Amino acid sequence: MAFAAVALLGAAPTGAIFVTSLPSGADVWLDGTYVGHTPVVVDALVVGAHHLTLTRTGWTPEDLAIAIAPAQTQTTSVVLVRDGKTSEGLGQIAIHAADRLGPITIDGQAAVVAKDGTIAVAAGTHDVTIAAPQGKQTRTVTVYPQTRTEVVLGGDTVLRSIVIAPADDYLPATAVHLEGTRLVVRYGGHDVIAHLGATTYTIDGHAISYDAPPTVVRTRIYLPLELLTMLTIRDKK
Image (cartoon, one colour):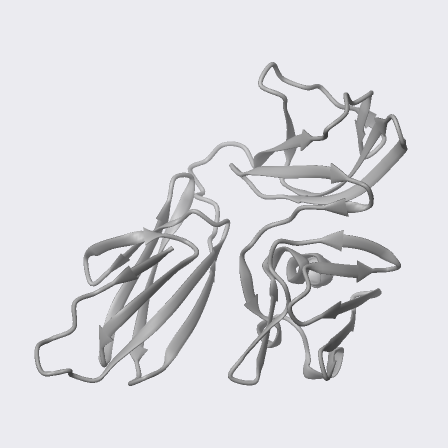
């Protein structure tokens, strides 16, 4: 999604900003004007200082001061904090598959599936095991408060979030190695192999598909935010 602001007459220097958030779908306000929901690109912005606000029900609003440079696209990734007034740190898991599913267990316990097909779970990282016609499949799924996580079964792949963030905001430089189009990440006890432009990542020997490939923007490497969160989950304990 893109929102184009009208540049001033006379072709004044302009820049742009690319805003992502975790969870995604946050409403974005720029200088008091609503410009869409994350992820969003706001282009043709007058160079200089601007005010950015992100809001989402159940999460604490975030206010940011940004500076737009001429002919550049600034990237801003915001991790929202759950609103302290929300009584429960619960999220939902929804599992999708072409074939009828058998029993589902989460962290070894039988899951209770609601009428709408979702499973309410505590926020955090869970091991989800599904009995399917091709055999049991186990996936490690990260659930965020007041957020529905979609799990799509298809062979050995899982569809994940499109939210991306700079790897160097989360990982030390020594953990990330890019040779040509081949990317190797070793951190938190995990080995990740990926390729620029490809959405399939090999994580600890298992193929997992995100809907955003590794991307290089002005020498910085961007990865799916859910992947970065999984790699650094132990850092927060």
